[in-house]
Length: 178
Image (cartoon, rainbow, N blue to C red; front, side, top):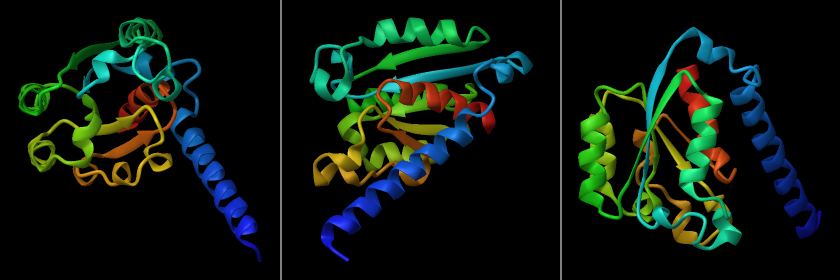
């Protein structure tokens, strides 16, 4: 067994894992049947530098702005109220989480770089009643080592990463299953 064989096995395992997760999350969602049953109110909360989506490092984050993507997302889920908030300030993110964490059906949180450093966000998420899904546009496991550890993951219902802006779409689908 060579190192190349082991690497190939690991790559195949990860691809199969992602496929299985997608199959579970996305089953029967092409018709959006789940949204005909009930209305949901969710908020997407983005952290530092995510106000620059569409401009910042398009090779990692894509070239679509969050405003454009939000319009598409809202059109795809007409029975789901999708609010949006972005801040570069940790305390403001905590304030918004506390403001929405008891009255919304779900929170989709991309804490940006605070994901890897913020115990304050971890503690805040733990205090909420609303389920929180951690989202990352890029596959953080395919980037710098320090990005591979999430301080907030233990408090979140789950993490979705690596599917570009569609990570947010998958998070809405996941929330609908809770």
